[in-house]
Length: 640
Image 1 (cartoon, rainbow, N blue to C red):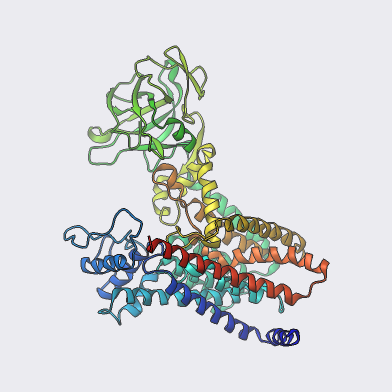
Image 2 (cartoon, rainbow, N blue to C red):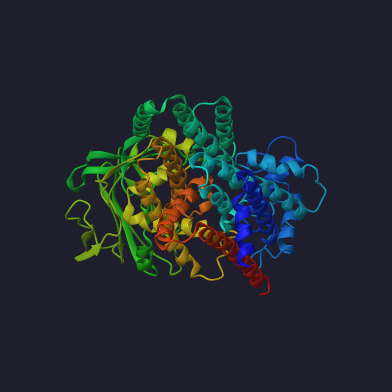
């Protein structure tokens, strides 16, 4: 038996790299087909809405516009969702009898970029009259093809970065084929599939350009794929500046590339600084224009900085700023009376809105003059509340001229509305004297003395599709208030990288798996740092720099994507937004494992083939465990 096994291992080692790639693609095809058919219909992130976009392209002339839908098609999709127990365990289901209102099939995606949906629509054009569930599976097959394309791109990219015989050349694309979370996403109907596949191709060609020097075919490929990324999703718009960098590096000799990096650094810093205006308030988020911190001389206790909100005309939306209340404070306030107030005045007599907690009534409108006056309201926080935000909002004025000022904003637990005026003995002090009692002010940067830059509102509106720069920047000014989000986001990105399926609600059947995987993640990251240090003299640092920029750009955008959770409904991002750099992410992790475990195996004098066999078996077992978890979950839901 041992002899025969050795012969099999020997035969595998003699395979050419292309033959190994063929085997890996076959593994990816088989694993992809398992995920295509084992995940029930419509049980991926927003899959009904993504399918709807592709269906509209296949069945109507031109591209759909935001808000377009077909009621009869939605009725078929909703019926299929009911047939396949989509609503099992939920308290609602779609109303198939609806005539005037669109039948609910989830979030519409028709405002997204069209390229992925155009690809997914290709087979649908040929089967317009067939069963809608069958059409869904055909669209999933388009994603499966893109899955295989990304695996091939992973092989090609690693081939540019490693020497002949390096096991990463076959192990990295094999791990892409067998990583459960990646296989799950890449066999769904979702534009994140095209984002991952096209950006993987982009990385391969960019790395090839940088490693081998300028070539026309590669340059045209980089330009073309970067342009395609613009029409796929905002998460991969990072390909455009990266593509320019790759072309510049490819045109320069290795010795001159250092100057290019200096120029890139200077342009990046100067460009970022040019986007900023330096009149924002730390810990407060302003969604648009018309809010800024100003130095005032209102007199009395209100000399210094205050927040100015521009009045707006009746037909325009209000100017507003928001501060999130931390989860710990929300817990502290549940079921309690709270008093909320601020010193307020205006450039001219008019009306203004008293500070309000979002969702707890309508902001009270009061008359203000040019002299500061303190206004307060008392509210009761419901027991079941899960999040709170304080909002300062301007009132409409004829012509929209002038500004209203807020200073020394207060939120305390208890009823102090009739207790007179609070006394804040120090600027931005956390404790106020109010009605003979001391009360803790639960807000941050209450007097707007701590300033913070914000993205120029004229530019921010064009960047919001790709990422949320204004929200991210505001969150960084308020780490005490945003730390909970970043901790939750990092944990969810890590867990979903290894496997949370369906709509992110299907976990591994053994919860302890996430703790084990968290430890392995840290080991891999540590090993990657060790590997970079050990190989620092032999590495091509221009290639490393490009890879680091790609990694940081995509992962940072994924991490910050849910910062809207701080100012509204909670959304904690999953790893699908970071899968465009799956190649580089796995490369770092596996290089880290290779360094640490390779060192241990060398000390123990373990042959290479048992190490490789163990790694492959672990991948297969892990993937099988994920598939079992999916079947176990849906069997349990459907039998209840």
